[in-house]
Image 1: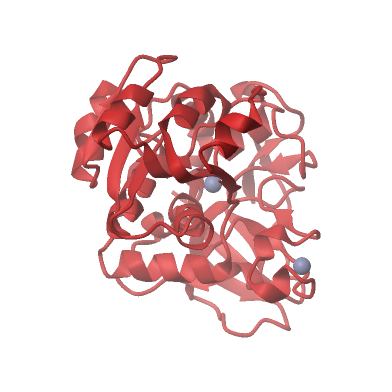
Image 2: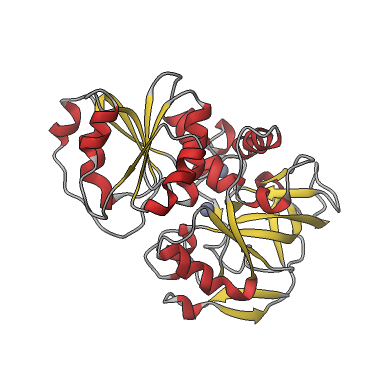
Amino acid sequence: MKAMVVRAPGGTDVLKIEQVPDPTPGPKDVVIKVDACGVCFHDIVTRNGTLKYGVQMPVILGHEISGTVVAVGRDVRGFKQDDRVATVQRYHICGACRYCRSGHEPLCPDRKFTGDWGLVGGYAEYVAIEDDNVALVPDGVDLQDASIVACAIGTILNAIREVGRLSPGESALVTGAGGGLGMHAVQLARLAGAYVIAQTTSPAKAAQIRALGAHEVIVHERGADFSAAVKKATGGNGVDVAIDNVGSQLFEPIRRSMGIGGRWIMIGQLTGQFVPFNPAQLFLKNVSMLSATSTTRRQLEDCLAIVARGAIKPIVERALPLERAAEAHALIEAGKAAGRIVLRPNG
Ligand SMILES: [Zn+2]
Ligand SMILES: [Zn+2]
């Protein structure tokens, strides 16, 4: 089959189309003909070498996968040929450890992140994913939309519902609101009943972010401290919950934006940069630093149901053929994509 392979970290020129063997199903594998694969910032930090944890090259990038089942392994229950499916961000979990057995399978020590470990990824015509990590796509949900549900919506559901416990009437700050995660965080925070404050450095995206449900959109110059605007929007209190998709670059303004007893949920880190901070500046306000990573299968199923009933719209800004993956990476690195870009390996 045709696949986009990265053999060593580097610029977008390390993305090369190769012919690799078709996947053959192991006992638990669901072999999927890929309809769409979302391009995540995670793919960029894997490709350029910033991310090293859990990476084994050569890799086929891509963990935001939807498609049609073409074959299943002998132990697979619940999926059959021609089923429409989407995947979480992993292709293997052990299924037996304390994390797998308690609904926290993204933390399984044996997990293999799709697109990071070996030649198993969605930038290819076919991919084999173990059944623990696959969900059926409901009727009425477009496969292209379904590809990004696990990562762009499920990660936010994990952050808001399980980790941050955002409640109706609370205020929520969404950083990087014009990005793939941010646009869905705005929608989900609004659905949760929060007063939603969105931060972006892209004036061109402000109207769209407002239309997705933000009550306030703060647009500012890159590097500027936006916390005064957050304070103003919250009557001087600061926010109850921050959903941070950006990381170190915004550390100080987010810290200043937190209200007393605020929950600061970290889910994104765009650079390898470290930040110094003084713990007293957090504990004197009882601010909690929290974090969430990727998505359980249950969260994916819940998000697909939310999308099926029209409560949240997956934002796919454009679809490109697999051969144009480098162009997708360049657009995302430059912050020029308003929502997710997806690749269509089978045309
Ligand atoms: Zn992703
Ligand atoms: Zn496990």
